[in-house]
Length: 627
Image (tube, rainbow, N blue to C red; front, side, top):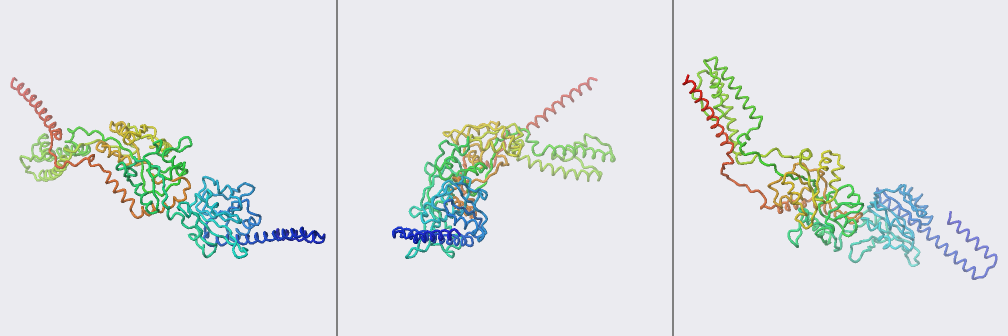
């Protein structure tokens, strides 16, 4: 072995120098060098055995059943490399190795998502710790220093450790009076602690660190009173808004306030981003609130921002606290003419059926009457029609056949008259509208265009790349309204004016657009399509690889499961309702002339028809008299 070869070499040099009777000083130096080398070799042998024991303890204890990626620093000596390459994988069954050799990386075992990263570090910190790949998602990091110069502060403040939720470091120390015994000490780092950031956990012992939680302690159980800076926009009710100049409210605000109280941190909010935008990537650069988070100027954003593939790749995203889609608001169609109210109680099909029955029943009555005596088709028709206008017959036929026949018809006519009368009362006072659009497909096929505030191209691109042909059709009809920060609702009213003009529908986030419509006084002139499109979870956005993001996930999960978020949402929605814009029920209402237009129109038509008939009869009477 290499150690034996070194020992034999120095023994031969020592014998040769002794036979040549060298000076005492030279012999003394050689003996001291030999002693130092033997001591170094012994320490190296001890470190090798200690490292092997620790790695095996880890694989059998806290890292059991975990997928581990081993990393060997280039400055590690050949002995440690031999352990990692041969003995440790065989003893622990760890198949994943990531080795740095000759300033290069063997990426054959690299994975973008790493469960446990175990690094064996030499004297110098490798670039993989100081500049890790941006797309790496590492859940836990364990760094093992194998040199006496090991500094846990330096290891735990590397970029890889700082962005990882669970971290720990092992550094060797000499113990005993003669300082001839080596032991690994375990440390972790609490970056948000106001004073004691480096936390010693004690000397390595397989029983002391037998579980995952014992080795990887929760570094963010408390945020230590740190202030988090939130990129926000006040114009996002019901998620975030201001009730006055100093008081904030909204679902996102209440969630963040609850987490701040639980984890001991404070936060700041902004009225809007510098450019007034929400979050769009243009020419490879993120802008708006998401741009502030991406550049590290802010820690997170809590506004309603939908999750998309580009955003998911560029940011850490919390668990969703609600689901929303894009809603469409469109103007109520003009009511149909009031004079038609007399025909609205029945559908066209129903009127056709009644007319058909009237003809068939009249014909049948005439046919049955022909077997009894002389009949008059016109008189039989009047006899049947009288029942539909609540008029009784002047005589009952003597034939029981006709009596039974009329009995069945009178009952049918009675039900028809009652049904018509009940519906007529409602239609006289409630305006009748044409059939409203209810789905995105109907909107796409209509003449309406679609307007939206110019937040960016994210929504339009989502419509364009959608596999739904309806959305791609709508994308071609979208007109963007300028986003003017000084205008109420950032100029949303300009879009709503196009809606009430009947030329456009407006799209935006479900709860946001509902609040704008209600708050700006358009609720009684517009309605929402029943269908929502591009439904997506709404979440908090963090800078990529934020190590404490998981604490927000834990807290938000408890708030969701306990029902707090649902209750807050309901309370906020109720508080945001503006009764001055709600259409109040009018209660009892006296009928007006416009309500009975149809009735008077029937009267006028009847009088006109009677007048024409009178003139015809008078003319015919004069002709007969003259003849």
